[in-house]
Length: 202
Image (cartoon, rainbow, N blue to C red):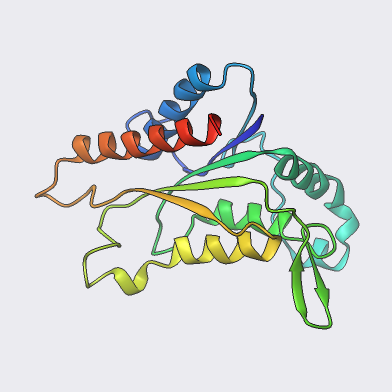
């Protein structure tokens, strides 16, 4: 099994960040569940991450970033399981994750246009989990449910490529004073652990 873990937290070095705690938990869990798996880790905000920012220059001359994009696409395609760890920023994914998506959602590589509309070029075998942390509760709080944009965005992107299912795992309401933050993170770890157990024992 090939596994790709993507850490999209800007403060990726900080062990106190909930997304980082979940990413670390997943890494340790996979060591036990899938010791023979090939695991690749991509930290989007790390200085050595090759994630081109789309600019006017390379938009008009795609060859400038083609090699970097092909490397990211190849990494994405060879993964059987993809885990994306991210905080919620202003109702949506963080900017570096958007940059990453802009480099892997490429016509004639991960999707194509046809007379009947777009068609994904991936075969759909990949399993993807989107692990999102947030200060507020976007699933139950009526003030925020309509602002629950990030999971819908990710499902749209994945479906565009041919991936029809996405597991959503949340640690939410982390900044609400009435909540036990540590307990919420532990609950998310439990859900993540159950998911990893199910997908590594299929």
